Image (cartoon, rainbow, N blue to C red):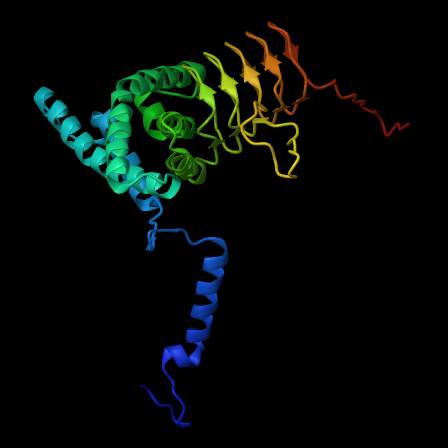
Length: 312
């Protein structure tokens, strides 16, 4: 015990009355958040581990860009295999944590399920990479400022966002919504692009600039779609069930068909369909279907110029 000049206990615990505060925090956890099974505290998935997993997957998918600087032909495959093995081992642990949090299964069954899910996720990685190549090419072809494919791959926030999303979406489809959401939020924090991992997005997808884009859980986006900054594909309303709680899981976000361009600031709400080959202008607010081959813009603003000090 540390005693101060006034003879009182000057330890940190006494100074801040930490004993009482810690006890009150424990009581609060017991009422609201703490989850236990068989007397043990359940460990939640780790954001730091998920960040390491994403870095590892970036390196495995694009080894000459996010891996090492110099490779031989044989060395690339060795690096990818080694990086994938290390990354999937970490992912396996995080999947076990989510299953522990969400499932009443015993430890051995959770371990079996976690390994099966990890294996299924790994099998999808070639498909994810193929989709990402179409996204990168769409960005390069769709932006006159892009000087090279490498610039797009390294620097474009839209590519960072869609890479995170395509990985998160696979986890979402494997019934791991918490891990998927953490990965989505890592991208959201880094890029300002908020894509729910449940959104179904086809190939050759390009988000230009990106900041402020929001795509909801049940949105469906077709091939060769281009979005600009601050576009929202959101829900129009949130139905409430008989118990007064929001109804979960219903289709409530837009369907964007193939070859649609949506310009900056446009907001599209509800389960509406934007027909293929349509263009939605900037700052348009839409809550209705749009037929194919349409062009939707704001009404033209009226402007008048007055000469020589003339007025109304």
